[in-house]
Image 1 (cartoon, rainbow, N blue to C red):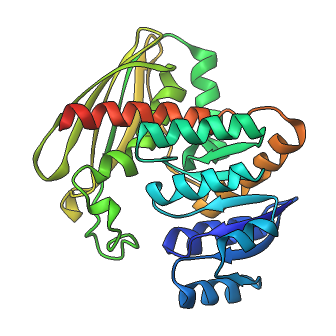
Image 2: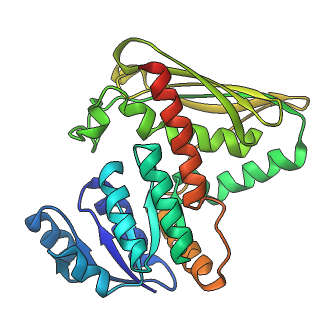
Length: 291
């Protein structure tokens, strides 16, 4: 399947490019970016053509992988779906409910396949952990702390404009928190949110299973105060989400391969655009409460 890559930032360079070139059944056919110079550099590194016309890229591919801000992705993915291209989407799929639902509707109408790249959902050790929790059962609650610092030395996203917005953490790490807790405790039925200083966000989730969980996230933690932990508790004790043992590029590779399978089989992927839209609905509810 011929893929086009949209985006030339750190995520595209570190994750999408290597992941797509390594994926079985995938041929990376070109790169489009908003900055011609950066597009030419990345395309040269990947050994593929650089496109300055998005429509021209769409004509030459079967699927598109996106590594651009959510608002940009929503519009460009809608255009791609409208001409029958399969979608490998970054999280969140959009930064508004209306845009997410419009994309979901277009994907359904055109019958194209979609996969949302939620990194930990595409790492085999994490999948084994989630499956083990489901098999064990009896989980009553959980928690997730993602206290990150954009200003930590070496953070590649230090200059990301959308992550610096007031509720940037909600839209950046929030999808991971909600997706992981959904995998551990089941779908989320209700969400309550409250804000703290410097973009700190707390959420209380009620899952359809009856379990409850809490989330604390920020992108403005002091570098020395960064911490990441997700876990559940219940009848069998406690269980912590394992540390990552695979790279983002390896997760992207698996996501691309599973998009190919979904496109060929016609079966929906568990983290398709409909799943991504539900995440956006929850995030938008949180933002409304915070505002």
